Amino acid sequence: MWFALGTPSSPNFVPNSIILNKEKKLKEIEEESNISYATLKRWVKAYKENGLDGLNKKERVDKNNYKKLEPLELEKIKRLYGKNKNLSISKLYEQYSTLSEKMNISYPTFYRIINNLDSFVKNSSKPYIRSIEISEYSYGIFQYPIYFPFNLQKIYYMTFFFEISSLRIVNFSFDREQRTFKKLYLFIRESILKEGVFPKEIFLTNTVLEVSKKSLRECFFESSISFLIDDDFDYNELRRFCHFLELDLSHQFYGKKDLTENDILEFLNTYIYIEQSESKFLEFYYQRKLDFFLTKSIRKVNKSGIRLKNYIYFNDILKDFENEILEVKHTPYNEKSIVVYENKDFICEAYKLDEN
Image 1 (cartoon, helix red, strand yellow):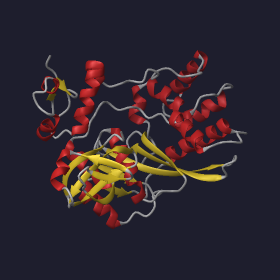
Image 2: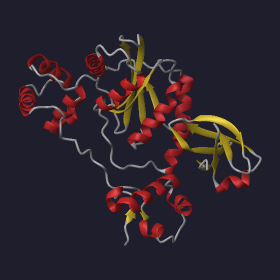
Image 3: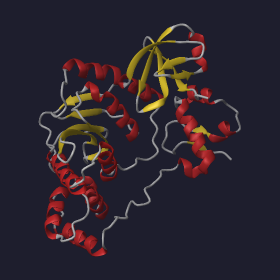
Image 4: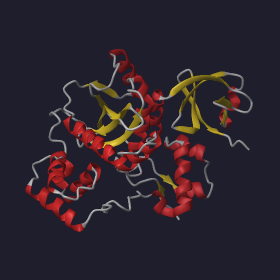
């Protein structure tokens, strides 16, 4: 059987029979195709477990199903949208909340319903953002404080990484403190990897703190991503979304005396619908560009590999660097591997050894 491992639109096809028949090692294919070893390994595993289906996009089974929504309520939403197609989705939600006696759906669910009614919405769901030249790969970062009364008595901060033209949320974080720009580096990298698209530019709203010209220049020269300070950004729609989120959080946890941060995070993961993108994998070149955002440490290479946070990471290539001091780049989002550099030259990706 002969087919290309990856997607038809991928710039680098890897014939699967070469891998399965062991005609070439994954390391050889990595060098020839510029596709990382980890990605190749993941593709092979997916194919062996599920065949071609393992390489295809996994679509949500509940994409067009809306939990706890009665047919009459769905028809009411359709009629409301049909009469007010010129209104933003947040305005429609406000009207629906006023009209419906059984208003028991969250804003993200309402958003998905409207978004599935008409392709028009997908192209015009951002009527309030100012007219700016936006490339195909433009994203933004927005932070918002949310106060939790109940037993927590604290202000938490939501950070959103979103696609500019549609306000589609790609990723979010929930933190005890407002993050400065540099403290967002790992979140930015994680968001780009989750999206599977290397951005041309990222707009920083005025909610992001401690942004300096020096840090912006450094980001551009090291990652090739333009970070732009946008004081005129109109984020009313995002504010409305956060307002509805606050209301639904209050409704969800009202009277709960033993509320924990894990309870909130579990609710947010369900509430904030993040659409899974197609199976896109960043090329090796772009993955290395994103290494700039990783946490950096200096470690000595031992015979067994590199020790970091009580774990041992190893790659055969490291044998040539025994007893040398190298730069290690890592992230708490993924403890399975680290990236190793000598000066600014990439050496390898080392993988965590089993503790046994």
